[in-house]
Image (tube, rainbow, N blue to C red):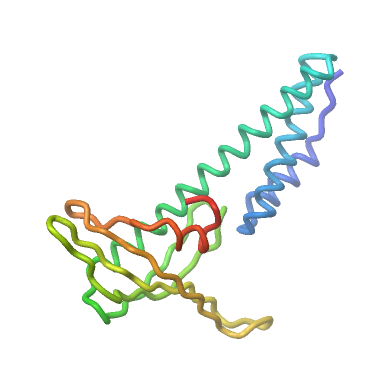
Length: 174
């Protein structure tokens, strides 16, 4: 017999898609995949081992999809900051802002400056300092978090070239 959980699935889906909190989104995706995997497994087999395999496969696929979307979102944000910083001379400051079409991350804004130019034969890079600026609200004062990264020129584009600041800023996913 197929068990259906339309209300639970709908609520989890709405909560997961409306929230920019990545830990909630990750767990919500895993839970939604678990419920979906159980529904698929119960319609396909009565064998517990096969059902477990189906459930784990569905969960893994859902989390891999979410992680891919997060990596693409982070890359877009890094590329935006790199393009803005690439136009700057050392010491100049510019603002940046990103609005995500899919709400898996919060929309963010900040400032960026070039602290130094790193260059060699056919290699032009810049060390940048960028901020994530959080506006004041009833719960907290305005806050800025600062990060250091390196960008390099690739033909006519500036690209993100460092991993460590991204690891601290965006977690283990780049």
